[in-house]
Length: 252
Ligand code: NAP
Image 1 (tube, helix red, strand yellow):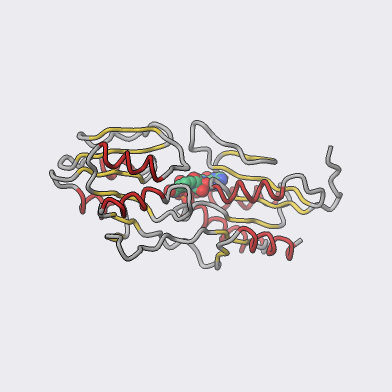
Image 2 (cartoon, rainbow, N blue to C red):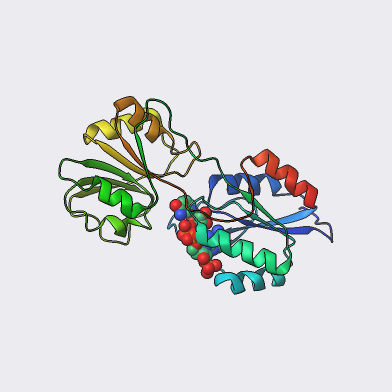
């Protein structure tokens, strides 16, 4: 049993990413702090990070403010996904209001290599307009939540990959596969070849777990429609877990 120091700092980790879980694992079990991971609770098969976990939205900025106060949180780490723009801006607003320090962890964006054929677009709507032609067989790897953007794409054929079954109606010409990463190059090559894919649509999530699809597209000469990250915040981000841990130590 761990005996907590009576003045243990209480840290809220806004999670839903591999990096957030890694951070929770590194902080779990320390007697000088309590780290609580927060998940939105979108996935049916949740993989819980180590340590204390809370699940579900806070109820906007006001809800987050009252959570931070009632749970005596003294530091917030925003380690959400680069596309989780609303949660990040709520974290900024709530921390500013309460004058609680906020550290942001954001993985680096992927960068195109010389042989890559990337078409960068600002949003999923632009991606849908770019690929929706009859000759296209599109691997759509953008998660489950925003698939509605593609539901009226009647011309192209789509191979859609998600972790859980999507709630939205899928494009009329499509096939759904349910898989959770990390993925491997050999399997991604097979996936793209098997359905004669000639376009890949993805968000610029960064990280290693889903990068092999880009390596496979490069190898097969398949063009990629890359959805750029939304502008999320003003607080500068650290991109590395070790640097983040140093910053956490500075605050403790
Ligand atoms: P979002 O659009 O920024 O957030 C929408 C609302 O969901 C927030 O206002 C908040 O509700 C709630 N929420 C989001 N993240 C939360 C968290 N970590 N803990 C508690 N509540 C949270 O977020 P999203 O893009 O839907 O992403 C949801 C979660 O999935 C995030 O934790 C993110 O890290 C993870 N994720 C997202 C993506 C992606 O592509 N967007 C990919 C992989 C993982 P309230 O306003 O009620 O507080």
